[in-house]
Image (cartoon, rainbow, N blue to C red; front, side, top):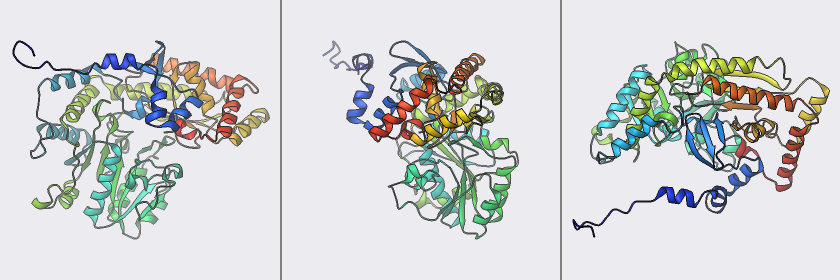
Length: 479
């Protein structure tokens, strides 16, 4: 007891926990969390133990500094551990504010909704808060069905809208869908950027919504100019809703607040935002919709909570969202995404003439896809064919592995059996970071264009080990 007769508060010593468990990441994961992922990461040499992060950088337990072009799948748009967001959360915790009362109308969610509406526009006047992007897309599916009285959902091939049951039915990859059926019925895929196929799917006037990513995360496929505007016109003509999934492409990543805003005549009926809305600190998402959709779902007093999410309006999430929007504006991150994204994209594109494997570079702001393909020279064709016969996911590991191991650059393959590497770095990415990445990438590409050579020997060894262990690479390669 203290002198005042009050028991002292015993706080969790997180520093002691971290220091006492340092280096046990993969041991603990194999024992308690996800053994297959831990094994796959070890197989490709991605089994690092990171202990510090700031902005565009990570540091491992040995003090080595890394350039992060993955940003937690886009969660850390504003940079890792942004001090302004962290300080806002600390300050709010000191207020002992009453959160999640539930039987109330929370102040903070109203404030954040107002800020989001101002940035999104399109007369989307109501905001429903979620915890994740997948939950946001599930919400969009339910609301579209209720608002239209229809049940069919159309989505674009190669899409990724999440891994929950409804969202999984709109997933373009069989790897994620396999073994989880039967999935949500009355869903139909159409090829991305194919307006003829979309119009055909809508022609029956039985579609509730067309859900689409303005830039597809799997492969970084960018909507053609005018595609989204015409898609919204077709949806309106046939009584369907256009839902823009901006979970990864939103929050300034492309140089606009939303990627769909690059197509000035597009008019979405719903927009789904998540990932970096909280600056990476707290799970949060939002679905913005028109008054017409909202009034169909929440149509009377007895339906005021017909759809709800326990943590959707959590106070910490709302504060983090407000702080993140302020940082996005104050730090000029959308302008930086445009400027630095164009610099990085142009420098990579200029390499196509020098490297046979490099087939295309696509970008909008700091969402960049580097696509590889079959080379023209006989010797490199042999290397390409051999490595792909070992494992369809293996070629890009010939880039991501040495980028990490030799140059301390963290990258990601953009999909299963993909020949695309995706770059979604924090929006604070600098010209110096561009230099770091491009110098490393050129060195790796030069090595890949030398066959036989050390990079190819390492790839073949990994491929053979994966075959012997019956261990797929795609789970570690392309999440």
